[in-house]
Length: 196
Image (cartoon, rainbow, N blue to C red; front, side):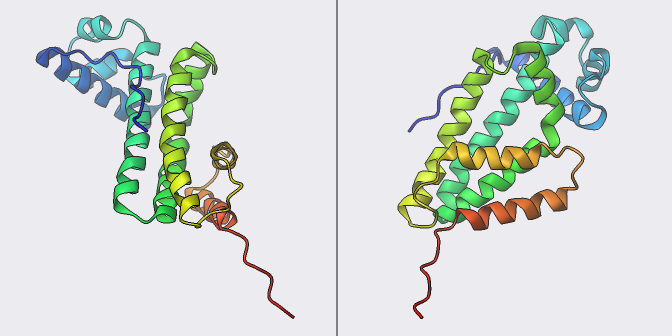
């Protein structure tokens, strides 16, 4: 299954693409350090461009948030395909869920602000969701085919469990990973009862 293209406004011209990449990188780093309400002037300064360049590429804060979000979602999807090539089916699924959890714990405010601005059912979020689901379904289907997970599992069940862990924004990372380990144990097929 080929991944669907994510919504992206990255320019084709080399100099414009470099500025775009520098702005998105600066925004991602600044948002991680200071939150999504960081001034756009600070992001432009950190990227080494003028504020006019930022506004030509990203006419609003929401447009810049979208670009950062798309880059992060693309990374989550790319990791699924990398894990699929490098690991056994269950290990690939587990590694991807760990990476998805880490993404969720670190990017919650970004997604929250975009949800307020765009709405959770917006075409932007729907496109991102389809890509994440395709990546996750690939790994889950392979783990099912290998007999490594319960056959009745559906991807949305697993995503809701992991999403529930992500809802604990004030949760320590160590605790979040312990909870994910419990979820991963629950994905395994039930062992037959021992004969008495």
